[in-house]
Length: 363
Picture 1 (cartoon, rainbow, N blue to C red):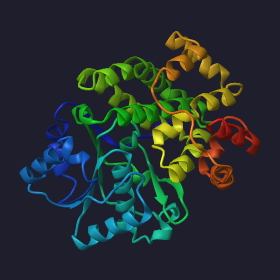
Picture 2 (cartoon, rainbow, N blue to C red):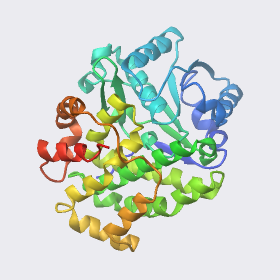
Picture 3 (cartoon, rainbow, N blue to C red):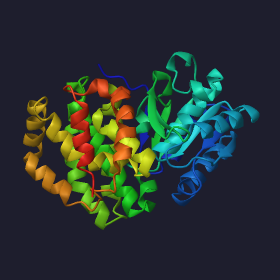
Picture 4 (cartoon, one colour):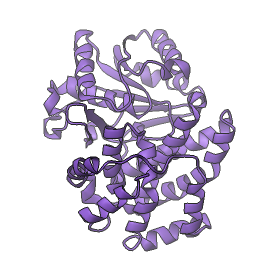
């Protein structure tokens, strides 16, 4: 089975090329974004030009921060209603686009704060346009939205087919202004999605070509982009890899690797992609007995061994250890074991095994 109802336009000057599709979405847009990246990348100016040319009015909602909070979604819902909007545009990394999805659903279904994870309450949705500015989450092609609750320090996602964007517009040029660490961490997030496409017990061979091509491309082009940030062809490859990752997890979702990453982000403010990468080796070793044939086939395609892959990963300049407290482990364990991703692990995972992985992160 493969399902991706999103129209995807991937090109230079993609917003202009998508003009007729954007104009067909509605008459008044709520543009959901953060404070800086949409402007710095040039994406916001391009979108506003197309909306103006198409006689589509808009309202800016620039309140989204990293790890969007439930309260921000509620503010966005109010802004959508108060301004009589009829579609949503999310511009940014995973956070603005995930917030845009949640705002659209909250507005369409009159959801309260405590109903944002209640997918049985999702009956309709306003059209969603996703314009990613990073090469990482792939959320432009998924049915998922990941939100944070600052009251409980819990980060969790929901999945609903209604949350698929109607339209995704991808222009690799927008990623050229990304800082070094954001480029690295988001690429590691895409790598995690691709690997978890092999791990998930809902894995589908239909997406294996995306997984193989995407991982091979990240291994080749991530070091190039890190040393040559304005290399457009390499940036284009990484953005395509992130899209592949999104399309992959839209079919099979994610596993323990993400379940562990969420509390690391909530409690320690570790960027999502970095949190995934910090446990990537341990997760692969844990899962290897259950997915040995899948990983062996992958490494045969890559013409490298598991140890070669670990050596490549170890060559990347990201943090592996943190000041992890025992108190954090006790608080995080219920979140990890209770997350929906745990049902998709390729083998049973014990609390003891999770403790071991977390303990390995200690400085």
